[in-house]
Picture 1 (cartoon, rainbow, N blue to C red):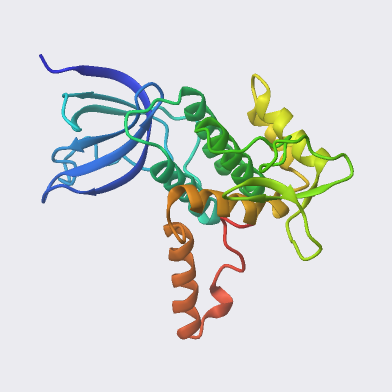
Picture 2: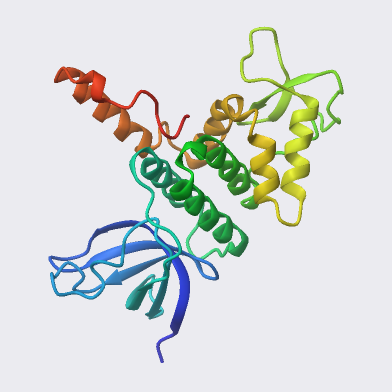
Length: 265
C-alpha cells in the first residue's frame, strides 16, 4: 500500500517541467523536510492546482507514494498574507534558493519551517525590513543545519573571545582576530550577543533584534559561509538580478534598474 500524507504544511521552493502537462515541485514541508512531488496535469488551463502552486505562499499539500518523487493529490492555499512583491519577492526567492542548496531531501526541520514562514510573512508585510530578515534567517538556517561555528569562541583555538577583541567570520575556520586590513569585523560582544539570541527557545525575534544594527556588516561573511557550504560561486537569484541590470544598462535604461541587490540590502 502506498504511503499517503494528508494536509501537510508546505511551501513551493522550485518547479520544473515533467511533461507537456505536468510539473515536478520541490517543496519544503514542516514534518517531512524537502521533498519532490509530481503535479500531474497542472499546466492544463482547467487544473485546480494551477492557481495554487505558487512560491512564497503557505499551502497545505497531500501526496502519496514511496518513490523519490511522490504524486501530489491535493493542494490548498492557507492564506494569511499576500505574496511578497518587487525587491521583497527577489529576497524571498533567495531564501528559497538557500533551502534548495543547504537542505538534504527528506530531512525534517520543523522549527526552521516555522522561521521560514515568519520570514516570508515579514517580507510581504514589511519589505523595507528585508535586510534584517535575510540576515536573521541566514543565521538561523546555518545554526539549525549545524553549519554555523560557535560565535563565542575563536575557530582555530576554541578559546573564548577576548573582551577587547574584534573578530571576522571565516568560512573554513570560524571566528578569528581581525587584522587592520580586515573589513566586516565585529567586537566580541556583538558575536556573543548573536550566539545568545540563537540559543534562546524562540530565537527568531531575538535574532532579528541582534541583527538590527549590524546587518550590513554581517552580509558578506554570511554570504561567504553560505556559498562555501552550498558549494557554489554565486547564488542564482543574485546572478539573475545582475544579468537584468547589465541588460538594462546595455539598452540605455540603467536608471530603471534597481539601485541595490535585494539580497544585499
